[in-house]
Length: 128
Image (cartoon, rainbow, N blue to C red; front, side, top):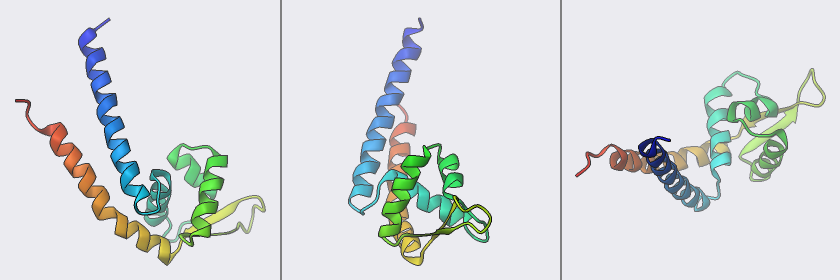
């Protein structure tokens, strides 16, 4: 066993955990979660003229369809997304970003980038 590699991996996991908790706290204060935020990002980046089914979003984010369904229901209730039937597949649901959802996303982006920037500055700072 390479003890240094294991130690480095454990350090990386710890830093990732700290970043995740910081992001969770940030999104919680804005009525979002990391998953809801990522769904809004996918819709904002790929929804211009594209038809995105709930299953497409689940695949892009590598999450289960039941989790996607529940999360989209919350976002729809909050009027961040609109869900409609698919013309060709009666079981499929088409998801689109609403103006409210886009506004929530754009309001959250600066703080999100600030957190990532601060994290990377610490990570990339030379060791003393």
